[in-house]
Image (cartoon, rainbow over all chains, first blue to last red; front, side, top):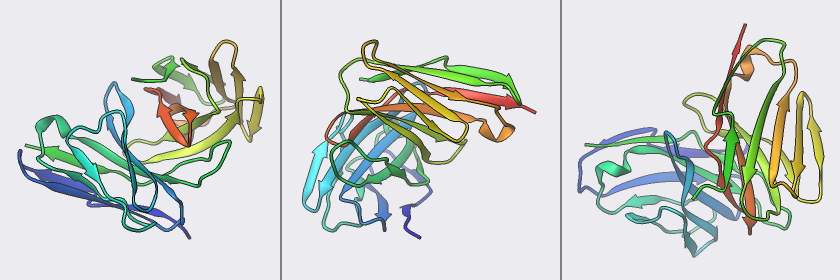
Length: 114
Length: 110
């Protein structure tokens, strides 16, 4: 069965370190998204990609970067982790087309920056 | 900025009762979707309603959309303890990108 996975599931890191969160999907979806979820804010879009070599900034992109070298993966990098980036991170993917498609979510990565 | 806002923020009901959650949004949309999130898990898609639709059903779920009022409602009929979760609306104002609301926490007591 197709799926979307994230790793690690839990990560503790120190302020200033570079951290990369992995996202891998086997749906063969063109669209991939990264969100962060914090209490009181719901899900906020960090970065998204509509295909290989395409990346776009979302609502809260400062301090984050992504790259898309293949269809399956969209790693999220925190260049220099800050305590404000402590959060739960979700990756999602969807098909492309007019009218919209549902997004499939990964299980999340809980990141703590100390 | 949040596009959708759910109301109420929290809802507690007994098994067998109906649960209604509302979502308001700000700009025109292509479609509106509802998702469920169980504690500590990723979101799961429930239903999608397009801007030219007014009502949609899926099992015990009924979704309505009023584009003139920029609002939607999710009705869960005959609720079960397993329906306990957070529910989010998400709007698609452009090009496959979703904007999520802050969610409604539903607690269903056995």
